[in-house]
Image (cartoon, rainbow, N blue to C red; front, side, top):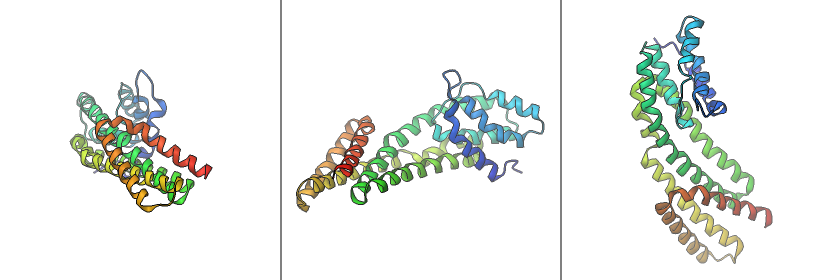
Length: 245
């Protein structure tokens, strides 16, 4: 029988949103992880001394993508509940935190954030500045919060077998899909900018939008890191237009 209830896992998942708040050069995310796990240990172990000893074990160096830390936390709680040896748990954590970090950056930083920014730019051009800002916050945060919270539930369910699950959620296919959304939205935004700044010629707008879309796709294919800089510039242009026009 599971010792942790759904509301316990939800509380731990919400607490994991603060995992970066105690980041340090020495332990990196370890203090934040131990702080989150302590909630679960209080239900898994029968004495306060056992809780204290368990928390102390997780103050060793730990670092992974913060949005995927719930996967590790959930699996660790399951393994502790099953009586897995500390050595095996430590080996599991060392083996999973690197791949999760490598999986999270391309999806969240290089795909989700640029795509949400580009879609927000289009929305801002059509409906105004405030809807654009709100849409970005919703698009990015809904996805990353769902992944954060779902991670701890799946990790607790599957234990050390969870290692293959995150790739099913945010694998290369979904990353490519988001980059396609980003390039298409950038093209649409460029067409709308042309429509706003120049004469309202639909043909010219469609042509410029199509060329912009292709240019963005080529940039994405050749220099993926440029999205980190290109989309904020696009958003800044849109917002400046909203203020000036």
